[in-house]
Length: 249
Image (tube, rainbow, N blue to C red; front, side, top):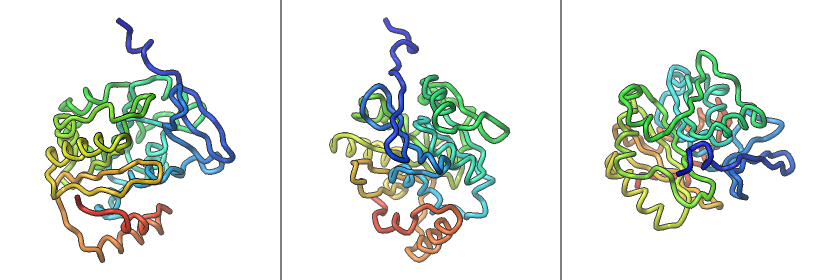
């Protein structure tokens, strides 16, 4: 039987123009970074993982706690920590990914607001320690083949819901075969309730970001539009574009 350490894929990167990409031993892209702007978010689907901002007051963001399950190239972790000034916790199983992010992707050292934890996301979300403490939970868990989410059961999403504060929100990257997406969506709807689940249309690359609220709210389009204007002005994310491809499921 292989140990976890020996069964984890090799981590490497490639540069194309002004973009650096993270790979886990294959050609599949696991994350990216703009070399000249390392704390911005380059990939469209990763930007959409920030859509929880549409459901909170911008003035409250810096007082909130974000958690990433799966570090990738640390784009979300860096943005939440550096740009949003949030308390930020990232959970990553592969120590090589953490080392790569620190060496090649400008991930800062841990500090009073940043904690990168080596661990199994399934164990973390099931543990009572984090329950009710996370405002923004961002789930992007894929292996080196990127065929379907590694953790994707209804029980897993129920555990994710338990982590959230009363007005907390989970965003999930779903990528893979269409049958996998529909199954994943049904698991999320079962765990959170259908009225609490929103979804984007797929990106050109096939990533579909799904958003699930701890407690369902139904803001008007006018309210969402005003919030999108604030998000673009404060943080430069394309939030107005989100509203054209984003709806309750």
